[in-house]
Figure: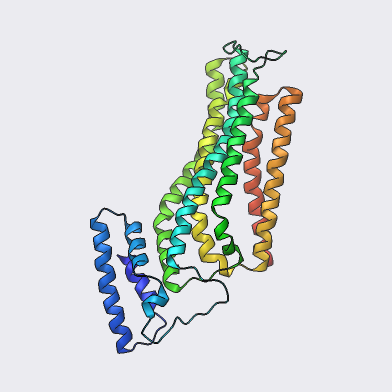
Length: 322
């Protein structure tokens, strides 16, 4: 309900306090709160009820039609209606899940390499063995999972093509911005909790190696399986959280980005791509040329850490130069 009131206050903030405007504000407030209560009674959540209420009453221009006034802020950037914003947020939630699953599949590929390698060492897998007694199932599973992950990345990118114009700058009315800010704050606690959980899992994950090594009491490729599974979960949580937060930050800050910040984003993307490419090359060389699949499995978690470090350094330099 507070989000509805904030929406209306921002909607009329820059308008003259004439009798017509005040009467229209009172009428809209009454009608929107009534509609909001109807949606809540139907079982919709807070965010869903707010979104449906605002969507049903249309955008700013429609609401102000007949008042002989217009929003005070003009912009040369294309405008996004509230309905477009809602559709964009819904789509980004979907693609965020797909991207998170894709990243997890990449790490699971490395996990499966260690698993089949360990099973082959224990003579529990006897099919598709090479001349050295290593299971070829590990490589087959790795490439299948990576192929699935890449497919998810490509599909996610294709879904958001219609919103590529956002990167060039957009204009949002004050009421829609207020809705985004309110929704962002409501989800902040959950995002923080998921981020903390992901970081804690990353920090504690090496303990699983010592525990597994103690249980097996011998050097085995199976030792790193629990470690990689924990890392997979942690990375999934961190990537998923980032994907859920990103669309709100993109919409709210797009108009505020400077040329330096946009250039920094491009540099960051290039650096991350290079890190992942090098990690993949090193992973395949260690595994195929030196038969060190168990050691190679640590490459991708290290690459993830390097991506985080590069982000901190690159954006730190950007802030100093602004």
